Amino acid sequence: MGWIKSGRRTLDAAAFNARAARAATVIEGFGIAKGDGVALYLRNEIAYFEAVFGAGMLGVFPVPVNWHYTPDEAGYLLRDSGVKLLIIHADLLAPIAEAIPEDLPVVVVATPPEIREAYGLADVPPPSGYPLWHDLLDAAAPLARAAEPAPSSIIYTSGTTGRPKGVKRDAFSPEQAEAVNFMLGWSYGYAQVLAGERDPATITTAVIGPVYHSAPNAHSAFSIRVGANVVIAPRFDAEELLALIERERITHLNMVPIMFNRLLRLPDAVKRKYDLSSLEYVTHAAAPCPPPVKRAMIEWWGPVIWEYYGSTEMGNVTNLSATEWLAHPGSVGRVMPGVTLRVVDEDGNDVPPGTVGEVMGRGRHGTDFTYQNAPEKRASMEKYGLITPGDVGYFDADGFLYLCDRKNDMIISGGANIYPAEIEAELHKLPGVADCAVFGIPDEEFGESVMAVVQPMPGAALTADALKAELKRVLTSYKVPRRIDFADSLPREDSGKIFKRKLREPFWEGRERAI
Image (cartoon, rainbow, N blue to C red):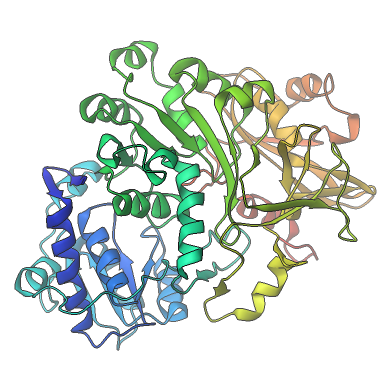
C-alpha cells in the first residue's frame, strides 16, 4: 500500500481512497450521473486526483483542462466537452470567468501553499459565492454503493494543427483493462508489479509533467492505482527534480525530452551535487529526443533511460531500453507484445525494412475510442482497422522502429519529399544550436522550400551562412534550408512539442496548404 504526497501533505492509500469516495458523493450532489463529464481546471496537487478517482467511481468522465488556455480556448473546451461541473483553483477562476457557460456550476479549490510557492503567487482568497472543494469533502459521507467501472479521462489533444479534439473512451471491459494495465506496466517500468514479483510500495515515482497532458495523466493515475508511492511536483524545475530524487529516493520517472534539455543545461557543479543512485527506470515519450541529448542523459544517469512510442488514440506500442538505443541510435523501440504495428505505402502494403512509409497500429486494448462531439473525425485516423497517428517512419532489419517525421510536416519541394526531422537532427549536432524547427514555406518555382528557425545557445554567435555551410557537408543540397531565421525561444507546449503551426502559418496566410 503506497502513499500520495503534495507539498507538506501526505495521505496513505486508505486516507486517499476515503477522500475519493467522499469526492464521489460531492460530485453526485450536483446531479451528475454516469456518462456525464467534470472539468478539472487544476494544477498538479492532491485535489486533482481526489476529483479524478471520485468521478471514476460514478462512471463520470474527468476532463482535465490546460490551465494555460486563453479565455477563448477555455470556453471552447467547456462547451465542446459538455461538462456538467467545473472544479477550479481559486487563482485561475478570474482570468476565465467570462468564458464559463452561465449554467455551469463551479466549485473552487483553495490554491495550496506548494502551488503558490512554485509559481510565486500571492495567497488568493477563494472568491465569495462559490462552494469550496475541501469544505464539501469534509462534510460529505463516502459513496455508499459499489463503484461503477471508471472511464478514461477525456484528454484534449494538443491542437498543434487547429482546435483540440477530446479523445473519449468508455470504461474498459475486463479484458481491455488487463491489456491497458499490461501496456502501461511495460511503458512505466511496473511489469514486475503486475506479475506479482514486486511490492508496489517499493516504487516511488514523481508526477513532474502537467496532468492535463496524456502521458502524465495516465502515468500518475496508474501509479496510484497499482499502489506505488507518488510525489506530486507542482511544476517541473530542473534542479528541484534532482533534489526531489535525492530527498524522496525516487525510483521511477516519466519524462519528456525538453526536461532532459533543461537538466543538461545545469552547471556541472549542480549536477554533481545530488545523489541520483535510487533511479531504476526513467522513461520518456511525447516528443522527439535529439540523439545527442539522449546520449548525454545515458552517460549521466546510466542505463536507466527507457523510451516508448504511442499516441493518445493508438495507445503505447513500442518500448526501448538504453542498451538497445545505444545499439540502434535514433530508434523508438520494438513492438510491444500483443501490439499490431505496420509501416505501409500509399496503397496499404507493408514496405520492406529501411523503406519509409506511414506508421499505423493498434494497442493491445484495441481501437475503441471516439472524439467528443465529433465522431466523424475518427475516420481520418483509422485505416485498415488500425490508427494512424500521423507519423512516417521505417523498421530496420532487426525490427526497431525509426520515425522520420509527422506526415503533415513533410515538405514537398520540386516533387521531392523532405522530412524536417532529418534536417533538425543535423542542426542539433552543430555547436551553439540550442533548438530548432524546420518547415516548408511557399516557393513560386518549387512549390515549397525549406526554412529553419534556430534558437541559439546563450552567447553563441551563429550566422545563417555558417549553418548552411555545415549542413551542406552532411545533407543533399535540396534539403539545406534556403532561409534560416533566429529566435530567442520557440513556441512549444509543456510536453515539448513545438507549435510549428505558429511558425509556419504566417507564410501560408491566404494560400492553400494544410497547416
